[in-house]
Length: 634
Image (cartoon, rainbow, N blue to C red; front, top):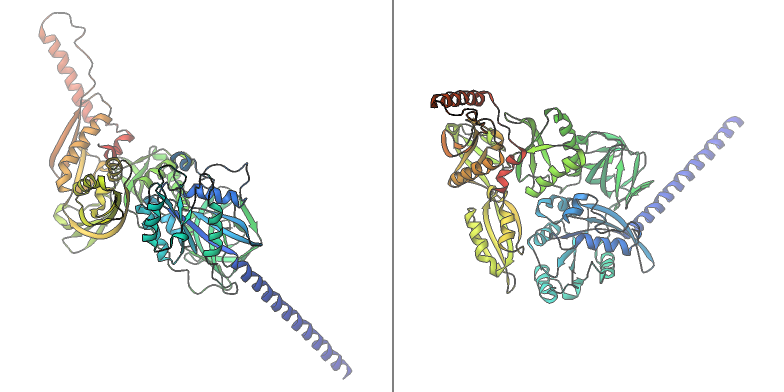
């Protein structure tokens, strides 16, 4: 009996100890959650959006300088533009995330900034940044006013319900139109004049007011640290030593080092070997909570396992659904990328996989060409995007590639009622099996000065455009809305627009569906053999002029051979244009001094027979520049 009483006392003591331990854990958890909620109130996630060259990167430099995130040794122009290509061209290609600490009224605030590109070809980078933020700095150049991409990015931010802080930059310039631009911003946003912050990012004037506005106007992130983990992947990079590093924003829950996590879309499970925040260098942390922006390293080696827009959650206590509202990219044009050396095919595949991690708007799939061998069909958001990808393949991966003529995606309706999407002219069915073809159309928004309205309208009408709207933003600025075929603008439209408007016109566009069109496949033939890499789908009315100019351009670019090279443009079996690259000839009659003419004729006939035989067995060497000749026909 005494033994049972003693055992009962021990069980009771054990129960009380375990109860006290559980209670203390609950108290600690509650205190930690209170601390996390207070810390979340001092977090501000924001991005900088603007038209190209309105001073986003320079403003980001001043913010980093004022918050002392970057010391004097590390401070250079365009700190966040890490690629040499960005510095050389003076444009932002990639969005860049960085964390700053700012003291305001005795409290320390954590500011997570994402700097975004301004060119229309990199609008996908902007959409990814906006999805991870609660506020945005809308930067407008005081010398140029509101531009097309300014409006486009603003609408994107409003759709995501972001708090907009208007910032007028470059007020120190002699050509600044401060009052005029202020009226434009008020008309566009419906804000008050005192809401607009006037700054000079170059000199630093007015930038402290931007930091105060970020703290006061942008709301703190909403989220519950107690809920299951929900973190949005908005970017990723490849590290040769550590594998794939994913950048994320936590909406709910917490993540700690060595947690077992999984990616919602792929279902793959990983160990969080290292997590941390993004400063000038990656700063490891023991844990991150709702509202934080950070990175995760989990030893992932395969790029297919990381998808931008995916949701990270825990394996043991997963969230029920992924984070919604993140759209997949839809390419605007397609082009073939082939290695110069056929043995580099697998290396090119690996390079494209790594590039896709860093640039989620790039899509590709394998294809083959009779002229170029095995390669990849790549989708791009525009010509600049295609040019940047080609340049990055050369610089970052040392890949020497050939890029074919770019074209857009068409919908081909066959006579049997089946619709197929064609990204490559070689995939077009036979003409007898085609019922009709539809091509993509866009709504183009062009903002320019009044004096250039006539030439801009002429250019758009030449490109089969239809004027939809004309609005005067101010006394000397007009907004034109045109409906245009996408295939007409992917080549030289933007360059021509900048030329005729002396650089003042800005351009933005949105896809507006498909329409039936009279399209034909234009083949380029060398010595009677079609070169599929130079084929293109084009409107019937423009085919003759385009084919003639292509033949003339190729005649300049293809080097002379030992035999004549016939360059022909053809629609089906009908030749519409021809040029000839003359052969390199040796003077075989030079050794004949006098004598009968039959001696010279005999030598010439012998040479002619040799040239004919050489033409039958010889191959034409086409330089890489010829494949992009279509882009520079003017």
